[in-house]
Image 1 (cartoon, one colour):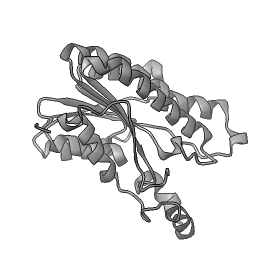
Image 2: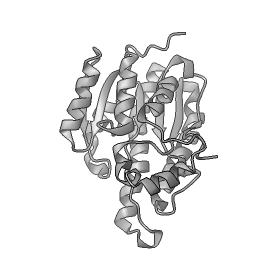
Image 3: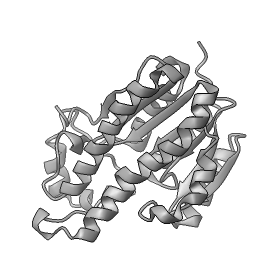
Length: 247
């Protein structure tokens, strides 16, 4: 059984940085061509594009703000003929729950949940015609261990995972697997400021049975497995990459 992804095209949302960029590079290493979505940092996106192309793979950029569903039709055009859809982009606001505004709520739910559904709606018909497809959402350990100051974020990720469970059952007969990968505390630029405080960092680390923070590459490996033929019998699952934090 070959784990090569040669001949497959993967669209990865939020892939100009962090976990998304690691996934893009990992899938390209195994032969996939990449559609690299980003919101606004063209310099960062171009850098990831160059790293993918250095592996001999094709890579194109797709810019869109997933908080604005009325303005992402251009991304729809690109996702309609993709074999692999990785829903990694998310918005995360840290606030006391009493201070959450309507705008805070809608932006997080729109990007983290609604956009996922819309992109899956666009991607699935092609996958059904090919009788092959992979859809992977990037969730969070907060689905089971919510941070007290990220009420909407954790709720949006839990909602996204319920979509995974529903669609996995509906699409399994079409040769499409649908799974969720839920990272724990990953040492990326999103967490740089918070983890830069040594006291806070140690407090968080004490809550992780493995005793250390994960890297973005820790998440990329399991995503690649789920995309490959070795992962063909895995669907409807939420797989935690969290050093045991969710236990």
